[in-house]
Length: 472
Ligand code: MCA
Ligand code: AMP
Image (cartoon, rainbow, N blue to C red; front, side, top):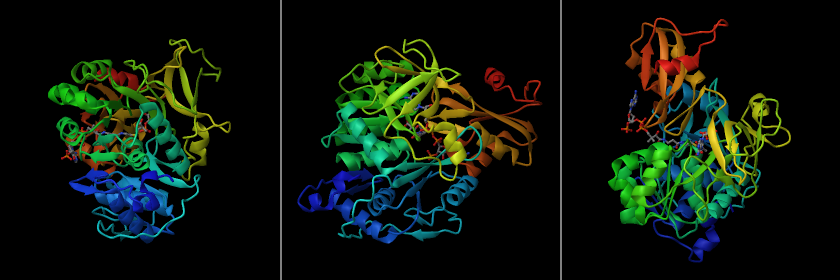
């Protein structure tokens, strides 16, 4: 079973757990989860796909678990989604209804409520392992986000590989406050907990004090965060010291700066485990609970994963810890393709099963990987969110006060990269940031908008983005 801890027979026979999930002030025992999520499953069974507006609530947990029980692919929609992106996700995914939380504007879709106190003890057969579980929307360098089709098999394999690497067991209490619409918070945090059977605490937002409290007062042992979260915890000092009682601190989704790694080690006594992956591949590399953790390096291939580095002509590159190449991955956790986009799928997923990650890396002779950067400057990682420069530029160009637009990710101590937009036109900078927040999502808004007389371009008219980074 994908959600192994929710096995109705085992739960009925006594394998219950009080407080299996704590989220948004609500506690759900394992039998609450089985009963209420199965009731959701009864209401969605037979649907082709449903949208779940992924606020961090018990309703979202039950909606997602119910879909997985019924074998209905769920489309997690960012809680802070704006109008244009919401429309795109619904149209592209063909979602038939909103399940659970509802947006202000439902875009004409029906609503299936999730009832926290409803119970069903119907037994569903486990859907086939190859069936799609989730369609997760993620940004490319250009165009609107693509729907990544993730199978049940991929999710189960990834969680099992990580459980081995991190010595993650039902005795852990996992804590995080990350969004439930991306791999990190949803697949690893929530579904991982429902598979392994550990307690799961969602802190609402990933605030330093909330992580500290979850460890000190609720027995948190295994903590997940993006580098921005760890950086804020180190800056807090007291919060970092409070994590000494935890078992394992795990960082991922973006590069963890060496000073943050060192700060955590100094203040909490724990060197963080780093792991690397993507929506398309799930998590494929990690340092080990029982192995070396090296600042700036993201670890070894998980069991069943193969990696290679290639140069521009596709030739394999030596694993000498120095020579930089394009990182390709083969893994049982790879996605099934981008929904409705065989062209885009073929660009990154070769017929021989190698996934082109778009990242450049080095591998040392012990198999340890260091991510050096991305092939494209147009894919931005801000606070751990992946954002395409192109999608923001398209929205900005749709504003009547903008004639030209170029977006970059500028280095930022807090967010890793911050979104900076350069525009030619007469719109007010604040208005443009709000406009992007309303159309795409709040987390995709430019943190800085600069109105300029002209954009630097080469002889072909292409914007020189590296020069714009220098301007910042
Ligand atoms: C500001 N706000 C606005 C506006 N400006 N609201 C509307 N319109 C505006 N123009 C408000 C927000 O609503 C929010 O309010 C507040 O300002 C703070 O903004 P926000 O951007 O949310 O906060 P932040 O503190 O900058 O966020 C940092 C963060 C966040 C919490 C670390 O970036 C985060 O959650 N990152 C996690 C990303 C993640 O999970 N990535 C995994 C991808 P209020 O606070 O009141 O709500 S999966 C992946 O990468 C792979 C698989 C992997 O390897 O894991
Ligand atoms: P996403 O599609 O949001 O899952 O983003 C995937 C991308 O995040 C990867 O291709 C990397 O560029 C980046 N990433 C994830 N984990 C790490 C990490 N530990 N170190 C550096 N970059 C990372």
